[in-house]
Length: 314
Image (cartoon, helix red, strand yellow):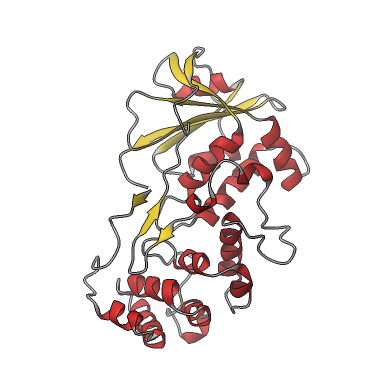
């Protein structure tokens, strides 16, 4: 686990007053302080919101997102401290409790996806939010969403692609050929993170990897998509203003764009995942976070590669 050392108690110099109020259960006062700070654009709002979202009773924490409190006072999906305030709230209560709260539709939707990642079905029969089998097998539930700390800050698991060097061998890559441009799926793949590069080719996974690999020979191996999925969700939700639910939705949008059938939906995405040929490799200069993978769809003859490395913590 990695502790986000950029956040936590004292980061904004707000001292012990917020924690003092939280320790005494004075949640109403903390909510009012949050609303005032947010309306003024004060950085104090973020850590106060974290305290409320983490520790307050659910019905009080939901008031962070109440637009009826006044212009500029309500938290949105983008409000964050160590992570989005809605995700802090969603990690603290089961779905039946969250479902009963008067949350805005977007916050409710993200909370339901978060609870699905943590093992719940979400709303009703869970059809929209339930994890597909390939989403569930590649990682432990307690590593999917940030672990938030009471006074601020968070811990987060580090998911890499390839997830391990075990079973990898030397792969000889072909000479790089021509790249395809203008495909929506390539743009969505590139948008997952600022420190990665994405390309698309007509060919196989090795042809795509050859576009971005450091040399003609790499250490890598074939993996099921389920083994790479956690790294993609982690990549898409690494920024502190984004949660794991948004990462999940970004990868779902990517897979929908990669699938070229005329019937988009969960069944079509399942079929795409089942037929993808996936390759992951390592680079000699890999930093703390790195990701190198290629995804080939034999049904269309298209293959994508995504590669990057950074020393920045997740």
